[in-house]
Amino acid sequence: MQAVILVGGMGTRLRPLTYETPKQMLPLVGVPMIECALENLARHGVTDVVLSLGYLPDRFIEAYPDDVIAGINVTYAVESEPLDTAGAIRYAAAEAGIAETFIVVNGDVVTDLDLTALLAFHRERGAEASIALHPVVDPSLFGVVPTAPDGRVLAFVEKPPRDEAPTNLINAGTYVMEPSVLDRIAATGRVSVERETFPSLAADGTLYAMADHAYWLDTGTPHAYLQANVDILRGRDGRNVPEIRDGSWVHASSRVDASATLRNAVVDRDCQVGAGTILERAVLLPGAVVGEGAVVRWSIIGPGAFIGECAELGPTCVVGAKEHVAAGSVLSGDVRLGGV
Image (cartoon, rainbow, N blue to C red; front, side, top):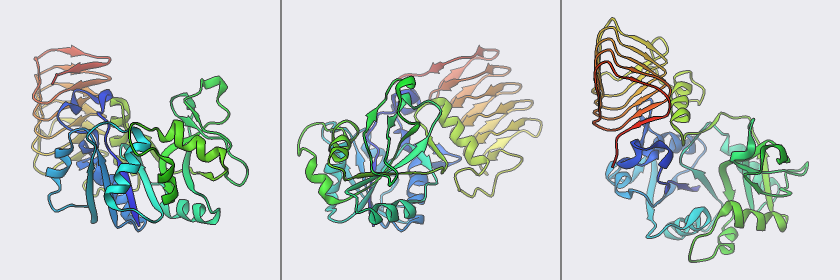
Protein backbone atom coordinates (compact mmCIF):
# COMPACT_ATOMS: atom_id res chain seq x y z
CA MET A 1 0.00 0.00 0.00
CA GLN A 2 1.26 3.46 -0.96
CA ALA A 3 0.55 6.81 0.65
CA VAL A 4 1.10 10.50 -0.06
CA ILE A 5 1.87 12.80 2.87
CA LEU A 6 1.32 16.51 2.38
CA VAL A 7 4.13 18.41 4.12
CA GLY A 8 4.56 21.45 1.90
CA GLY A 9 3.15 24.15 4.20
CA MET A 10 5.29 26.92 5.66
CA GLY A 11 3.95 26.57 9.21
CA THR A 12 3.41 30.33 9.55
CA ARG A 13 1.31 30.03 12.70
CA LEU A 14 4.20 28.31 14.50
CA ARG A 15 6.81 30.95 13.73
CA PRO A 16 9.52 31.58 14.78
CA LEU A 17 10.05 27.82 15.29
CA THR A 18 9.38 27.15 11.61
CA TYR A 19 11.72 29.71 10.09
CA GLU A 20 14.46 27.07 9.99
CA THR A 21 12.54 23.87 10.69
CA PRO A 22 9.49 22.57 8.76
CA LYS A 23 6.50 22.09 11.04
CA GLN A 24 6.45 18.33 10.47
CA MET A 25 10.07 18.07 11.67
CA LEU A 26 9.22 19.60 15.05
CA PRO A 27 9.35 16.90 17.74
CA LEU A 28 6.43 15.50 19.71
CA VAL A 29 7.88 14.13 22.95
CA GLY A 30 11.26 13.74 21.27
CA VAL A 31 10.08 12.20 17.98
CA PRO A 32 9.68 14.32 14.82
CA MET A 33 6.03 14.80 13.89
CA ILE A 34 6.61 13.20 10.48
CA GLU A 35 7.77 9.98 12.15
CA CYS A 36 4.62 9.87 14.28
CA ALA A 37 2.54 10.08 11.11
CA LEU A 38 4.46 7.29 9.40
CA GLU A 39 4.34 5.05 12.45
CA ASN A 40 0.54 5.07 12.26
CA LEU A 41 0.67 4.34 8.53
CA ALA A 42 3.03 1.42 9.14
CA ARG A 43 0.62 -0.08 11.67
CA HIS A 44 -1.96 -0.37 8.88
CA GLY A 45 0.19 -1.96 6.21
CA VAL A 46 1.55 1.05 4.33
CA THR A 47 4.96 0.14 2.91
CA ASP A 48 5.83 3.09 0.65
CA VAL A 49 5.29 6.81 1.11
CA VAL A 50 5.97 9.83 -1.05
CA LEU A 51 6.45 13.12 0.81
CA SER A 52 4.99 16.08 -1.06
CA LEU A 53 7.53 18.80 -0.22
CA GLY A 54 7.65 22.50 -0.91
CA TYR A 55 9.02 24.39 2.12
CA LEU A 56 12.59 23.59 3.29
CA PRO A 57 12.65 20.18 1.57
CA ASP A 58 16.32 19.60 2.31
CA ARG A 59 15.56 19.34 6.04
CA PHE A 60 13.62 16.13 5.41
CA ILE A 61 16.07 14.71 2.89
CA GLU A 62 19.08 15.37 5.15
CA ALA A 63 17.36 13.89 8.21
CA TYR A 64 16.61 10.57 6.47
CA PRO A 65 19.50 9.91 4.08
CA ASP A 66 18.65 6.22 3.72
CA ASP A 67 15.12 7.11 2.49
CA VAL A 68 13.44 5.14 5.28
CA ILE A 69 11.23 6.61 8.01
CA ALA A 70 9.65 4.42 10.70
CA GLY A 71 10.41 1.37 8.57
CA ILE A 72 8.62 2.76 5.50
CA ASN A 73 10.34 3.40 2.17
CA VAL A 74 10.19 7.10 1.34
CA THR A 75 10.55 9.07 -1.88
CA TYR A 76 10.46 12.85 -2.19
CA ALA A 77 8.40 14.97 -4.57
CA VAL A 78 9.67 18.55 -4.37
CA GLU A 79 7.39 21.16 -5.92
CA SER A 80 9.11 23.90 -7.91
CA GLU A 81 6.09 26.12 -7.23
CA PRO A 82 3.11 25.85 -4.86
CA LEU A 83 0.45 23.54 -6.31
CA ASP A 84 -2.12 23.61 -3.45
CA THR A 85 -3.49 20.38 -1.98
CA ALA A 86 -4.89 18.60 -5.07
CA GLY A 87 -2.02 19.73 -7.27
CA ALA A 88 0.44 18.43 -4.68
CA ILE A 89 -1.33 15.07 -4.52
CA ARG A 90 -1.25 14.65 -8.29
CA TYR A 91 2.37 15.70 -8.58
CA ALA A 92 3.52 13.42 -5.75
CA ALA A 93 1.53 10.46 -7.10
CA ALA A 94 3.07 10.94 -10.54
CA GLU A 95 6.58 11.12 -9.06
CA ALA A 96 6.00 7.85 -7.18
CA GLY A 97 4.24 6.09 -10.06
CA ILE A 98 1.09 5.44 -8.03
CA ALA A 99 -1.37 3.36 -10.08
CA GLU A 100 -3.50 1.63 -7.42
CA THR A 101 -5.67 2.62 -4.44
CA PHE A 102 -3.65 4.91 -2.17
CA ILE A 103 -3.88 6.91 1.06
CA VAL A 104 -3.38 10.64 1.53
CA VAL A 105 -2.49 12.15 4.90
CA ASN A 106 -1.93 15.72 6.08
CA GLY A 107 1.44 15.64 7.78
CA ASP A 108 0.58 18.11 10.55
CA VAL A 109 -2.31 16.06 11.97
CA VAL A 110 -1.73 13.73 14.92
CA THR A 111 -4.19 10.85 15.02
CA ASP A 112 -4.60 7.18 15.84
CA LEU A 113 -7.25 6.78 13.12
CA ASP A 114 -8.01 3.19 12.12
CA LEU A 115 -6.86 3.34 8.50
CA THR A 116 -7.69 -0.32 7.99
CA ALA A 117 -11.35 0.43 8.79
CA LEU A 118 -11.37 3.45 6.45
CA LEU A 119 -9.91 1.38 3.62
CA ALA A 120 -12.53 -1.35 4.15
CA PHE A 121 -15.30 1.28 4.19
CA HIS A 122 -13.98 2.72 0.91
CA ARG A 123 -13.89 -0.65 -0.84
CA GLU A 124 -17.29 -1.79 0.43
CA ARG A 125 -18.92 1.24 -1.17
CA GLY A 126 -16.96 1.18 -4.39
CA ALA A 127 -16.01 4.80 -3.74
CA GLU A 128 -13.74 6.86 -5.94
CA ALA A 129 -12.50 8.67 -2.83
CA SER A 130 -13.29 8.40 0.88
CA ILE A 131 -12.69 10.94 3.65
CA ALA A 132 -12.20 10.37 7.38
CA LEU A 133 -14.47 12.66 9.40
CA HIS A 134 -14.03 13.98 12.92
CA PRO A 135 -16.57 15.78 15.16
CA VAL A 136 -15.59 19.22 16.51
CA VAL A 137 -17.28 21.87 18.63
CA ASP A 138 -16.61 24.72 16.16
CA PRO A 139 -16.64 23.54 12.52
CA SER A 140 -16.14 27.04 11.05
CA LEU A 141 -12.37 26.55 10.74
CA PHE A 142 -12.62 23.37 8.69
CA GLY A 143 -14.25 21.70 5.72
CA VAL A 144 -17.70 20.45 6.78
CA VAL A 145 -19.03 17.22 5.26
CA PRO A 146 -22.75 16.32 5.47
CA THR A 147 -23.47 12.73 4.37
CA ALA A 148 -26.31 10.36 3.50
CA PRO A 149 -26.96 7.36 5.80
CA ASP A 150 -24.65 5.16 3.69
CA GLY A 151 -21.81 7.69 3.95
CA ARG A 152 -22.19 9.22 0.49
CA VAL A 153 -21.10 12.85 0.66
CA LEU A 154 -23.94 15.25 -0.08
CA ALA A 155 -21.81 18.39 -0.16
CA PHE A 156 -18.39 19.66 0.77
CA VAL A 157 -18.59 23.03 2.49
CA GLU A 158 -15.27 24.72 3.19
CA LYS A 159 -15.17 26.75 6.45
CA PRO A 160 -18.85 27.74 6.83
CA PRO A 161 -19.98 30.26 9.50
CA ARG A 162 -20.46 28.38 12.76
CA ASP A 163 -24.23 28.97 12.94
CA GLU A 164 -24.71 27.88 9.32
CA ALA A 165 -22.73 24.63 9.35
CA PRO A 166 -24.96 21.67 8.34
CA THR A 167 -22.99 19.29 10.58
CA ASN A 168 -20.11 19.31 13.05
CA LEU A 169 -18.33 16.53 11.17
CA ILE A 170 -15.22 17.91 9.50
CA ASN A 171 -12.65 16.74 7.00
CA ALA A 172 -9.97 15.12 9.18
CA GLY A 173 -7.26 15.27 6.52
CA THR A 174 -6.98 11.54 5.79
CA TYR A 175 -8.27 10.15 2.48
CA VAL A 176 -8.39 6.95 0.46
CA MET A 177 -8.30 7.56 -3.29
CA GLU A 178 -8.48 5.65 -6.52
CA PRO A 179 -6.04 6.62 -9.30
CA SER A 180 -8.99 7.96 -11.32
CA VAL A 181 -9.13 10.92 -8.92
CA LEU A 182 -5.77 12.05 -10.31
CA ASP A 183 -7.29 12.43 -13.77
CA ARG A 184 -9.72 15.00 -12.36
CA ILE A 185 -6.87 17.29 -11.26
CA ALA A 186 -5.38 19.76 -13.73
CA ALA A 187 -1.83 18.83 -14.68
CA THR A 188 -0.47 22.33 -14.03
CA GLY A 189 -1.13 25.18 -11.65
CA ARG A 190 -2.74 25.35 -8.22
CA VAL A 191 -5.72 23.08 -7.54
CA SER A 192 -7.49 22.69 -4.18
CA VAL A 193 -8.74 19.24 -3.22
CA GLU A 194 -11.16 20.82 -0.72
CA ARG A 195 -12.62 23.51 -2.99
CA GLU A 196 -12.44 21.82 -6.40
CA THR A 197 -11.78 18.07 -6.42
CA PHE A 198 -14.03 16.96 -3.55
CA PRO A 199 -17.05 19.05 -4.62
CA SER A 200 -16.71 17.57 -8.12
CA LEU A 201 -16.61 14.03 -6.75
CA ALA A 202 -19.58 14.75 -4.47
CA ALA A 203 -21.59 16.06 -7.41
CA ASP A 204 -20.97 12.78 -9.24
CA GLY A 205 -21.92 10.70 -6.19
CA THR A 206 -18.54 8.95 -5.95
CA LEU A 207 -17.25 10.60 -2.75
CA TYR A 208 -17.92 8.91 0.61
CA ALA A 209 -16.98 9.76 4.18
CA MET A 210 -16.65 7.78 7.40
CA ALA A 211 -17.12 9.37 10.82
CA ASP A 212 -14.65 8.28 13.47
CA HIS A 213 -14.09 9.16 17.12
CA ALA A 214 -10.36 8.49 17.02
CA TYR A 215 -7.90 10.85 18.65
CA TRP A 216 -7.28 13.76 16.25
CA LEU A 217 -5.46 17.06 16.53
CA ASP A 218 -4.29 19.64 14.00
CA THR A 219 -0.96 20.83 15.41
CA GLY A 220 -0.77 24.08 13.44
CA THR A 221 -0.82 26.57 16.36
CA PRO A 222 1.40 26.91 19.45
CA HIS A 223 -1.50 25.95 21.72
CA ALA A 224 -2.30 22.87 19.62
CA TYR A 225 1.37 21.86 19.39
CA LEU A 226 1.65 22.05 23.18
CA GLN A 227 -1.59 20.10 23.56
CA ALA A 228 -0.30 17.37 21.24
CA ASN A 229 2.74 16.90 23.46
CA VAL A 230 0.58 16.78 26.60
CA ASP A 231 -1.77 14.30 24.95
CA ILE A 232 1.12 12.01 24.05
CA LEU A 233 2.35 12.18 27.65
CA ARG A 234 -1.11 10.96 28.63
CA GLY A 235 -1.09 8.18 26.04
CA ARG A 236 -3.99 9.56 24.00
CA ASP A 237 -2.53 8.98 20.53
CA GLY A 238 -1.54 5.35 20.96
CA ARG A 239 2.21 5.95 21.26
CA ASN A 240 4.07 4.11 23.98
CA VAL A 241 6.65 6.35 25.66
CA PRO A 242 8.03 4.24 28.54
CA GLU A 243 10.40 6.94 29.83
CA ILE A 244 7.54 9.15 31.09
CA ARG A 245 7.90 9.82 34.80
CA ASP A 246 5.22 11.53 36.91
CA GLY A 247 3.50 12.81 33.80
CA SER A 248 6.58 14.42 32.21
CA TRP A 249 9.35 13.32 29.87
CA VAL A 250 13.05 14.21 30.11
CA HIS A 251 15.60 13.06 27.54
CA ALA A 252 18.43 11.04 29.08
CA SER A 253 21.03 13.58 27.91
CA SER A 254 19.37 16.52 29.70
CA ARG A 255 20.06 17.77 33.21
CA VAL A 256 17.16 18.78 35.43
CA ASP A 257 17.88 19.94 38.97
CA ALA A 258 16.25 17.76 41.60
CA SER A 259 14.43 20.77 43.06
CA ALA A 260 12.72 21.67 39.77
CA THR A 261 8.97 20.99 39.43
CA LEU A 262 7.71 19.44 36.20
CA ARG A 263 4.01 19.05 35.36
CA ASN A 264 3.15 17.62 31.93
CA ALA A 265 6.46 18.97 30.64
CA VAL A 266 8.68 17.79 27.79
CA VAL A 267 12.43 18.33 28.05
CA ASP A 268 14.22 17.27 24.86
CA ARG A 269 17.87 16.34 24.46
CA ASP A 270 20.83 18.35 25.83
CA CYS A 271 18.66 20.75 27.85
CA GLN A 272 19.49 22.25 31.25
CA VAL A 273 16.90 23.13 33.89
CA GLY A 274 18.03 25.03 36.99
CA ALA A 275 17.13 24.77 40.66
CA GLY A 276 13.64 25.80 41.73
CA THR A 277 12.37 26.03 38.16
CA ILE A 278 8.72 25.28 37.38
CA LEU A 279 7.81 23.79 33.99
CA GLU A 280 4.09 23.27 33.48
CA ARG A 281 2.74 22.06 30.14
CA ALA A 282 5.92 23.40 28.58
CA VAL A 283 8.09 22.05 25.78
CA LEU A 284 11.86 22.58 25.76
CA LEU A 285 13.39 21.81 22.38
CA PRO A 286 16.97 20.48 22.06
CA GLY A 287 19.66 22.48 23.84
CA ALA A 288 17.33 24.89 25.65
CA VAL A 289 18.47 26.27 29.00
CA VAL A 290 16.13 27.48 31.78
CA GLY A 291 17.77 29.32 34.66
CA GLU A 292 17.14 28.96 38.37
CA GLY A 293 13.77 30.01 39.71
CA ALA A 294 12.22 30.53 36.26
CA VAL A 295 8.57 29.64 35.62
CA VAL A 296 7.48 28.41 32.18
CA ARG A 297 3.81 27.60 31.62
CA TRP A 298 2.08 26.64 28.33
CA SER A 299 5.09 27.85 26.34
CA ILE A 300 7.60 26.51 23.83
CA ILE A 301 11.31 27.15 24.27
CA GLY A 302 13.18 26.77 20.99
CA PRO A 303 16.47 24.98 20.28
CA GLY A 304 19.41 26.50 22.11
CA ALA A 305 17.30 29.28 23.64
CA PHE A 306 18.16 30.65 27.08
CA ILE A 307 15.65 31.67 29.75
CA GLY A 308 17.22 33.78 32.49
CA GLU A 309 16.87 33.29 36.23
CA CYS A 310 13.46 34.04 37.78
CA ALA A 311 11.91 34.86 34.40
CA GLU A 312 8.19 34.08 34.06
CA LEU A 313 6.69 32.92 30.78
CA GLY A 314 2.97 32.26 30.61
CA PRO A 315 0.43 31.23 28.03
CA THR A 316 1.36 31.19 25.22
CA CYS A 317 4.98 32.21 24.57
CA VAL A 318 7.09 30.89 21.72
CA VAL A 319 10.83 31.53 22.05
CA GLY A 320 12.79 30.99 18.86
CA ALA A 321 16.11 29.21 18.36
CA LYS A 322 19.03 30.68 20.34
CA GLU A 323 16.93 33.58 21.66
CA HIS A 324 17.79 35.04 25.07
CA VAL A 325 15.15 36.01 27.64
CA ALA A 326 16.64 38.28 30.30
CA ALA A 327 16.56 37.35 33.99
CA GLY A 328 13.42 38.54 35.75
CA SER A 329 11.42 39.03 32.53
CA VAL A 330 7.64 38.58 32.69
CA LEU A 331 6.04 37.53 29.38
CA SER A 332 2.51 36.32 28.71
CA GLY A 333 -0.02 36.22 25.89
CA ASP A 334 0.78 35.51 22.27
CA VAL A 335 4.47 36.40 22.58
CA ARG A 336 6.81 35.43 19.75
CA LEU A 337 10.54 36.01 20.16
CA GLY A 338 12.90 35.50 17.22
CA GLY A 339 13.03 36.13 13.52
CA VAL A 340 14.51 34.72 10.35
